[in-house]
Image 1 (tube, rainbow, N blue to C red):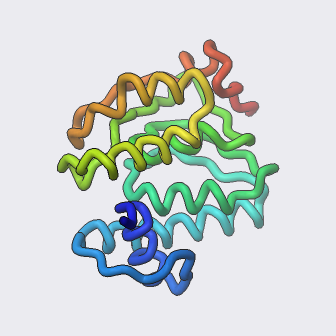
Image 2: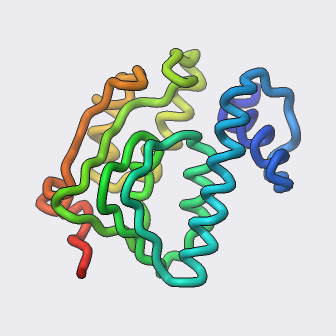
Length: 176
């Protein structure tokens, strides 16, 4: 059985004229529309990172996991990803980029995967949780899998400051 992730990717990436998976029917039109918008933002970020060697994320409310994993997979490994403000939900995947850095005042707001706040079936929940966790470095990965992924409400976040991520050695402090 195809996972929700592959169904969503097929719908979104087919819309964006990129076909990584075979097209499948996808019933959640609002998620597909949201993902199409987020894919366009993703493409712009990747283009900026390639052109300028860095991107700065000051406020990002997150969105479609497929678009964020697509961005992560396409960002140049040498690009600098400055996380300087609020980074919510799927935006937190940027913590795992090798060129990511932060500032003490940044805030990272985590929650588990859902369909816009609606619970997924167990199989999809496990797959999407593991997909997200695969982008996080330790100890964030373990914390996410044991604690945060079970918080699926759209406003049910666990927050970590940039200062804490710097102290834990998860991210370096961005240079000026």
